[in-house]
Amino acid sequence: MKKIGISLLICSLIIIFISVFYFEGKKNTSMVNNKIDEVSHEEERKDDKENIYTDDNKIILGLYKNYHDGRERKLIREYLASWSYHNDISSFEVYYTNEEAISSKNQIALFSSYKDMYDQDLKYRIGYFLSFETTLGVINKTVLKPVDTKDFFNYLEIYLYDDYHQNGGWYSHVTEEEFNENTLLTSIKLTAGLEVEKIISDITLTAFTYDSDDFDEEGNYRGISKYTIIVKNNNN
Image 1 (tube, one colour):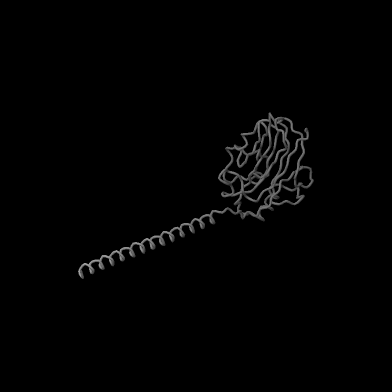
Image 2 (tube, rainbow, N blue to C red):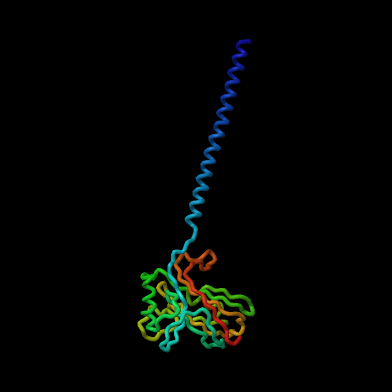
């Protein structure tokens, strides 16, 4: 009887030991897993924080009308003109200011004077966004280079100019072949297209400055350096 009691005691101790070891192991494993999960979540939160987009672009800009008659250039908010096929609606110049009126002096010198206040090294480029409604639907288009205007050319002909990289002589609009990484689209001309009568709304024109991270996954501008005008049809 004494041997059997001792054997039972030994077996009980072994079972208790194994149980304690097992549950303690599970506890430690759970703690390790929880710690790993905490680290993973912390890394995810850190990545999310790092991936939050912020725009530090401080450029203020406006769209101006140059009257070419000695008058000061005027900041445009709304512009009214007649729209008829292949006739120019208007040209608008971009400057890094939104003063109500600015000088009528040479465009290259004037643009440089404002550019140098914000962007001496030409870190930022200039793009446009146009929006209007046609009889067949709404057109929303970001324009960063000449080829981007082809989708709606029959409605509205867009001509883009780099007035900054000039020598003072005559020059034409920028073509897709001429466009490069240094091109600065400082002005835009709107001309009525072949099917301009099918535009049934005002034209919303936004100019903006951008660098590489200023667009979302769908290619939409998300920055803060922008200025918008409304172009109205005098025939309506």
